[in-house]
Structures are given as C-alpha cells and as structure tokens.
Length: 289
Image (cartoon, rainbow, N blue to C red; front, side):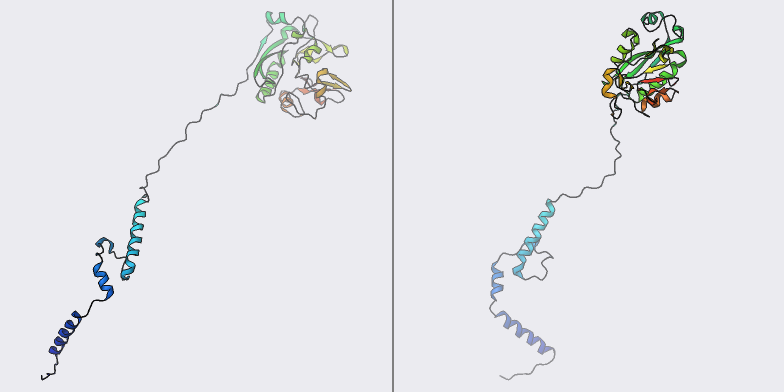
C-alpha cells in the first residue's frame, strides 16, 4: 500500500481518530473497575467540601460533614433578644414601729394624796400643791416597756419628763419606778427593791434636821442597786456591793458621760457620781447636791 503523507487539517483529524480507537481497546485500570462496581455516591454527599480529594478519602470527609451537621441541629439556637423589662423590687414589709415615749404631769389630786401619807406630811419644806405626779414609760431589764410614776416639784416636771424621754430613747433599763410610799416612805427599803424614786420628805442620811434634796421634789435616784451610794467602805444599799467597782459595764449602770448623765445634764441637773469623796451614783438633782 502506498502511504500518502498528511498535512494540515486532514492530518489533525486522522490523528484524533487513531487515538480514539486505541484508547477504547485498552483494559480498564483496577481503580476504575472498583469504582464501577461500587454504588454511586448520593448526590447529597457529593458536596463542595470534597473538592479534589481522592476517592478513598471521600467517605471520611462526608461522614465528618454529616456529624457536624447533626451536632449543629442538636445545639439550641439562640433566641431572639427581647426588650428589657423594668421590674420593681417586691415591697418590703416594715417592722412594727418603735414604741413612742408617753409621759404626763398632773397635779396631786385627792386619790394620789391619799397614797402619799408616808412621803408627805405637814411641815415638809414644799407644799403638796407644788408637787406633780408624773406618769411615764420606761424600758425594763426584761426588754419590755413599763409604766412608772414619780412625784417631783412642779417647776421641774417638764425637765424630768424630758430627761426620762432621753433615757427611753436610749433604751436605758430601769428596774421599777414607784412612789416611795409603796415602801412606807423608807428609803432603805426602796433602794433594796431597786426602786427609782423622786420626792420623799426626809432628812439627809446621817444628818438629822437637814432636808434631803428629795424633800423639795428636785432629785431622782435611778437604779439604786446598780448605782449605789459609796462612801469609804460603806455601800448603800448592801445589794449594790457587786457594783461598787465602777469599771464594770452592766445594764442599768451609770457612768460618766453616758446616756443617763447626758439626759439629766441636758436639763441642767447634776450627777452624784461626780462628787469628790463620797459617790452617789444613783442620784441626780437640780442643785447638783
């Protein structure tokens, strides 16, 4: 056979036909044969994540992608932001109001005069019409509010009520507050009962003929047991001996500059605890004596 040389477009077409015939007759490669026998990968798994990864790595990539999608589906989706709501704090319940001090001053009427047969009598340095009965609240050692009575001179009734109001506001405890007549006018008995008292027509202890400041209605003794009279080795009342050492700090005791001293100082009254040799820690008076 005579071979005709080809050139130009005819040569290109002939070479193409020749290559096609040769490639169709070559046996398939093992990798292509395995791919042909395997089921086709679903379209949903042929994702862009695979890219140019070889066929053997495709299942791993697809599985990882599937797991990531499942995890994302299980995670709670963030909720849309809601506008802030203004909430007010629940109302607080106020406790019971603190007790208010109650105090009054009244002239000595017939009923009160009949109760004062031990503390007042004709010949006392003050007339009974110049005295006033004070009815007032005070705190007790039990933490409760109690009602008490004092008799004082009418010129000092307002001052004593003001001082007692200050003691009440400070919650200063007072054991009891009764007219000294409840003890027969006996000052020793009244002190032994730790009774806070005021008017009592009597002489100064140990000085017959000399009127006590209590005889004028301008002196008050507060908690005699916690605040005894101390002179040398004498302590009155005797039950106040444990309180003769004033370095102790116990309820009902009176110390320099404390609430009790300030209360009476605010109305111009002096304190027996500031005396020189003898100390009358229970005693307050308008004259300072």
